[in-house]
Image 1 (spheres, rainbow, N blue to C red):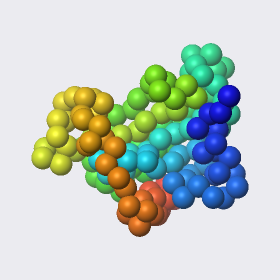
Image 2: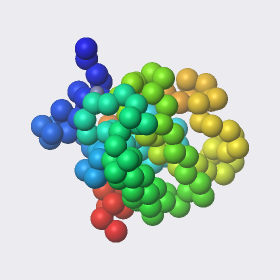
Image 3: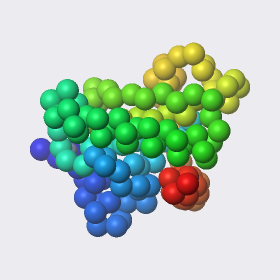
Image 4: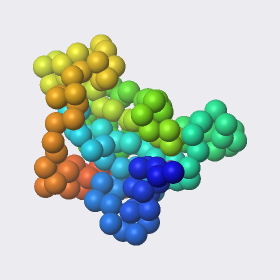
Length: 145
Ligand SMILES: [Zn+2]
């Protein structure tokens, strides 16, 4: 079975994934394909597992530290007032976490709700490769701070 997360990880290891930001303890940080919330990062578990709860406790703890590092980097770059952390698995079974900067109105259409209530036209707006590269570079710099 093909897993799109495993394919993205393979491209990271080959050095051909332009969304790659940082290698962490248990995960790779990549820029989300769409950026309605500027600085939206996804942490992909380095190996294929489908249930966070079935990972050994030490790996779960390392992922929590990866999430904290991601949040610090995102906030250092965006100054966003809030961060949402989400591990869903409904669409992509490979364990991954969305780390989503949240802003105030009017940049953020509804700061009190989860991002998923927004229409697909908002969530999946096309991201120009030049813009993607600029955000990735800022986040890479934020990770080094
Ligand atoms: Zn996978």
